[in-house]
Amino acid sequence: MKRNLERLVNQTFDILVIGGGIHGAITAWDATLRGLSVALIERGDFGSGTSQNSLKIIHGGLRYLQDGNLSRIRMMARERTTWMKIAPHLIHPLACLIPTTQKMSRSRMAMGLALMANDILSFDRNHLVDPQKYLIDGMIVSQRELSRILPGYDVSTSTGGAVWYDAQIYNSERLLLEFILSAVDAGAEVANYVEAISFIQQGNRIIGVRAKDVQTGQIFDVQSKLVINCAGAWVDCLLEKAALRSEYVTSVAMNVIVNQVWSEVAVGLTSQPVNGNPPQVLFIVPWKNKSMIGTCHIPWRDTPHAFKLNEAMVQQFLDQINSAHPPLKLSLDDVRQVTWGFLPVHKTEAHKQPVRLTRDGVVIDHQKKDGVSGLISILGVKYTTARMVAEQAMDLAVNRLGMQTKKCQTHMTPVRGGRIEDFRALLRKALLTVPRVINERSAEHLVYTYGSEYQKLVDCALGQPDLARRIDPPLPVTVAEVQHAVHHEMALTLADVIGRRTELGSTGLPSMAALQKCTDVISREFQWSPERQQQEINSVIQTYPFKQSEALAA
Image 1 (spheres, rainbow, N blue to C red):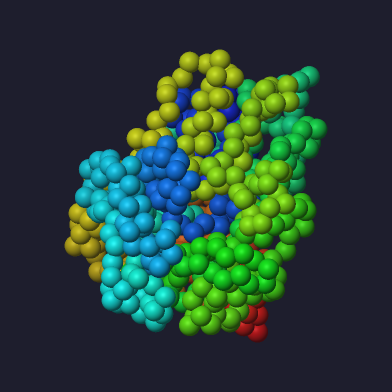
Image 2: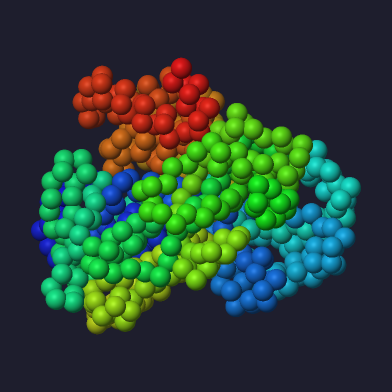
C-alpha cells in the first residue's frame, strides 16, 4: 500500500469516502467488493480519531433484553458471528460476568432466564467452521465460584454471578487497518494525511471535494459521483462548508488502561453515585496482561477542536471505578493509557443524564433531508455494528447512483489475513515451523496480528537477522514489523507505527530506548534530521497520560 496522490486526481471515482475510521474503512471495502471505483482520504492517520477509543468487545446484545428488543439482539448476535468469520485472527471469544444480587432484576433466577433467552436468540452463533470461535451457553455460578474467579472482590453483597460469552478484538487498530488494506487489495485508492477542506458543488449536487495534503500543503481536487462523509466528530464541521448540518451533537467517551485486575473474564460492576454522576455499569476487561476499564461519557457541546482531556476528568472517572470496586484504589499514577473519542447524541437527547448515545450509528441521505444530491453522511457508534451500518450506507449509495452492482459481500469475505479455517491449527503450525531466531512469543504474536499473512513477516525477518530482534523485550514486536509498516502500510510518522501499526504503544508509553530504536528504523526510510527525530518522539510522549509522559520526559 503506497501513498500516491496523483492517482486521486486522475479519475472520477464512483465513491469518495472521507474519513479513515472504522466506518469509513469498511465502507470503502464494501464499495470495492461491489465493483465500484473507490477513493478514501483521511485528515490524520487511519484510525487516529475516535476509532482509537474502543473497549474492544464485540457485543452479542445481552444488555438489550431489558428493553425486550429481540430483533436487535438477533442482529447483534449475527454481527458478532460475522466478525469472527471475516477476521478470525483478530476476533476471539471472551468470557463476561456480572455478579448476581438479591435485587430482583439481578437475581440468579432473573439472570438465568436472561442467559437462557440470550442463548436461544443466538442459536446459530456456532455455525462457523473454526471450533476456536464456538461460544458455550451462559451459566450461573455460585458465590464460592465467583470468589475464585474474582480474587479480592467482596462477594458478601452478591449471590453468585452470571457468565456469558461475547468476543474481543485482539487489536482494534490492526483490525481497522486490515479493512483499509483489503480495500486497497480490491482496487481502492487510499491516502492518509489528506484533509477534505470543502465540497465541490454543481448547483445542488456534490461532485467531489477540494483536498489538502497535510504534509506539503498542496491543494487538489478529488472528483466523484458520490461522497460518503465518515468524518466522525468532524462530520458537521465538513457539512457546514456546504451550509448543511446533522441533527446530532457529540459526547466524549473515555476508557482507561491499568495493570491487570482480573485475568479470566470481563467483569461488569455498577458504580455508586459519585461527583454528580449517576450509577452505571462499568466493564473491567482483561487485555494483553492489563485491564481496560470503560466507559465514561462526558457531555460536550462545543466543537471537537475545543476539547482537551485533563487530569480532573480522568480522576473523576477513577472515582467512579473505585466506587464500583473499592479495593482497587486507583489513582492517576496507576493509569497507563487513556483513550477517548467523540460519539453522536441526538440533539433532543443532549440534555439528559446519563448521556443517551445513538445506539447503532446513523446513515443520513442528504438528497432526502436537504435536497443536496451526491452526499451521504455516516455517524458511527461502535465496532459491533460498523459493518452493518456501512452496508446500509452502500445500499443507499448504489440506489442513488442508479448503478447495477454486486450485492454486499462484507458479511462473508475474509479481510486480508483472515483466510483461516482453524485458528489453533494455524498457530500450532507457526510455533512448530517458525525458526527460533524469532522469539516464540513473537511468532505467536505474528499469527494473532497478521493471521494467514504471518509468513510474509517471518520471511522479512529471516532476510536480515537484525529484523528478527524484538524492539522492546518483553513485548513481542519485531524490528521487521516496524520496517513493514513503513514500506507496505503507509506509516508516515513514529506515532503511526507506535500507536496504530504495532502493539508497542497499545498498553502504555514505550521506553525511551524503544522509541529511539523505532525512530532509527523509520529515519533510514525518510531521512529525518536529528531535530525531526526528537519532534517525532516528543509527539508520541505527549499522547500518553500525564504522569507517564512527565516521567519519561524527565
